[in-house]
Length: 89
Image 1 (cartoon, rainbow, N blue to C red):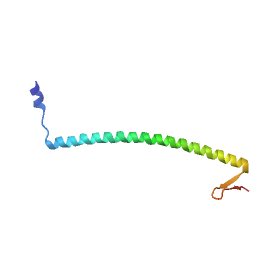
Image 2: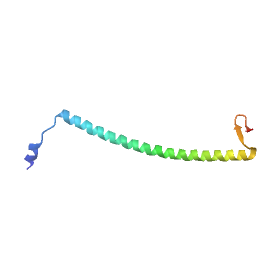
Image 3: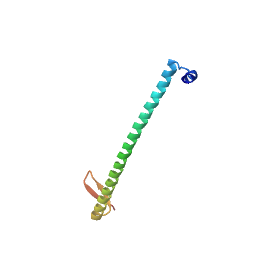
Image 4: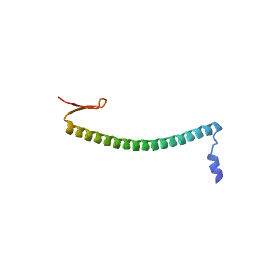
């Protein structure tokens, strides 16, 4: 019975085996690269979420400071270089 299997088998040339091996190896490398890319993407998305939270905190702090300054001095703007509040006319 094993002879029937051998009758249907045709040996590949060394060149064909090498080409197929290269394609398989390239496929494995691409699979690994996609896996690494997915991991980096997850890390970047996580870092982005942290930065969004920090930006939100900064915006809240900025709004609170602006509100306090407006309550104390009225409507206007601040010149940080001079360290002064400029009242709006």
